[in-house]
Image 1 (cartoon, one colour):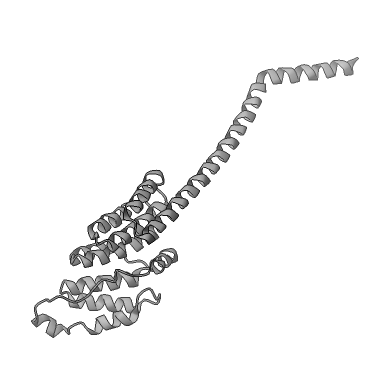
Image 2 (cartoon, rainbow, N blue to C red; image 1 turned 30 degrees about the vertical axis):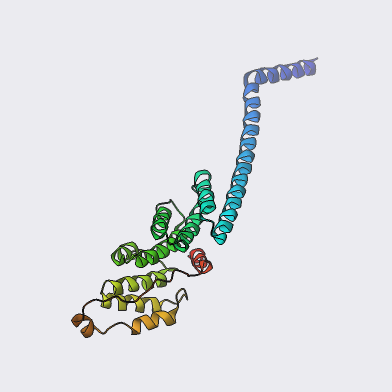
Length: 240
């Protein structure tokens, strides 16, 4: 009889506990299920968005390869609108800048590369963009803007390219001593990110300090390499 009362008391205690806390248990289970569902949904949405952005970027590269500026601009705009804070958007700006230069629209290339530099993150791609922007500005005879752009932005992976471009800008500005120092800095870098033979030739072509002080500044003849291989730049971007 005592055992029966004990079982009844236990059942009553369980009923009382469930009456007081049962809703919390059910709520916890439901909340956990919702969190799991939400996480899975987020993961799926992220994956789908990445696939969509990748597909658009593949389309853009085909547009650029075909030289189809109108289609490329439309695709780049779609990437910027739907995937604006992704590496695909950053890389699309590099691709569009190259196409603009192929179409002799250098100011559009400048605007596009400057847009890349204002994005949040993507520092490696920004290094690529900064070097390319320097080349376009040199093409536009804006050497002082190149100096402003590159000074203070040295990095281990891009130090040689920055120094080489700065040397070209200094030559164009008649600052031959600074140019010599920059070319020598480019040659000291151990990472083979520049044509050291070409840099050496530019260094040897500099006037000596006495001659430079006597002669007026003339056209340096330095031409930015507007056909540098994209793959080299991207490899440097990933090396940092």
